[in-house]
Length: 179
Image 1 (tube, rainbow, N blue to C red):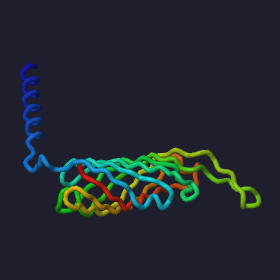
Image 2: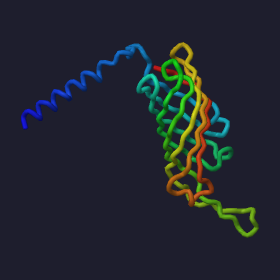
Image 3: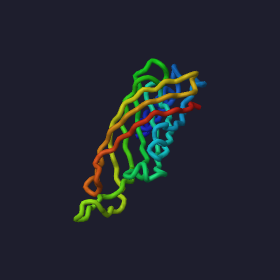
Image 4: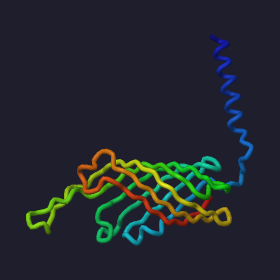
């Protein structure tokens, strides 16, 4: 028993030393990024995002959208969307990418029309989870400033029958800063 335990500790020590000895790691590489979507103010909303690079080809991030003008955007209230991205570019975390995302969202409830088919009452807000995928392109200028365009499509998972929508769409034209 003691030999097995000692062998397990030695294996763990070798694995942890090997994981810390990354040969292509650059101590001056910027691993974080904040972004602002430039399209969403046109629809009466604001979207910000944070992304953390895991390595040269992949990252995880989260974006949040909040609607402040319901006269322009009358269905979505807000969403919080974590995502994972894989990059195909030659430079560090740039170029063409694909992503998978989840989205916790608040959408207006179903509209129930009266007999005159003009007036309606709206059900209470629906909270749901959406899963989806997307793709995009990222350009890095001077290793700090970022320009990104992306599109994503997802479907509501649990409460799609309680709203007039069963899908979500993510559109982005963002500027950002790496630090």
